[in-house]
Length: 207
Ligand SMILES: Nc1ncnc2c1ncn2[C@@H]1O[C@H](COP(=O)(O)OP(=O)(O)O)[C@@H](O)[C@H]1O
Ligand SMILES: Nc1ncnc2c1ncn2[C@H]1C[C@H](O)[C@@H](COP(=O)(O)O)O1
Image 1 (cartoon, rainbow, N blue to C red):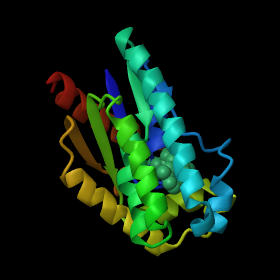
Image 2 (cartoon, rainbow, N blue to C red):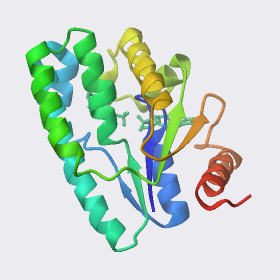
Image 3 (cartoon, protein in one colour):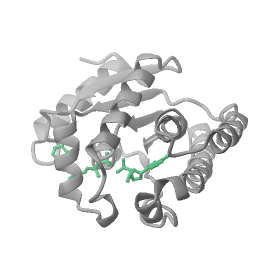
């Protein structure tokens, strides 16, 4: 079983991924953030570093999918924090649309993505955490990563629009949308149970 958690920056993916991995006793795959050699530079100068960062994330995410595939064939359960689909359909697409990534870099990137995606298995369940801008801003501030302090509201808004568009066209498998605006699964165990019940119901027909 493979559950992938998707959603905008600060939506609560990592927090939920860790909690679900603990609950189901499955392996968790997190993003390559702390050792990412481009992320800080990217936030300082997006046009300069957009292509480098996208190639880095694409490669790191692709490796992760191959690792997940091996665990799946050994019947191990996996929770994944963010997917390769979001790199291309959300982040790279948004950078291109916002003219922060040039046409030739974007086409070059898409060629690479298309070559890789045929080797990627979709998750058994895609869990989309939908969060409005105030919730995202509050949680990004709470997390307090230096390089994210100057993220513009406009950037988050554009990403949210890409998420909504992508999710409404998602056809690779089962999809569960959870509105997290009024959920606090950090402090309220009942809010975590609400999500776990929805997952059990979607995946196993329980409840
Ligand atoms: N539903 C929630 N309610 C309250 N706080 C949350 C919630 N989800 C996440 N947080 C807090 O918000 C911050 C960002 O969450 P995180 O899981 O790192 O988001 P993401 O991985 O989506 O970027 C963390 O400090 C986390 O403890
Ligand atoms: N593909 C990406 N392009 C640009 N930025 C990205 C990409 N994937 C992740 N990120 C950024 C967004 C955040 O600053 C960090 C970690 O993501 P988070 O949603 O907080 O887990 O990486």
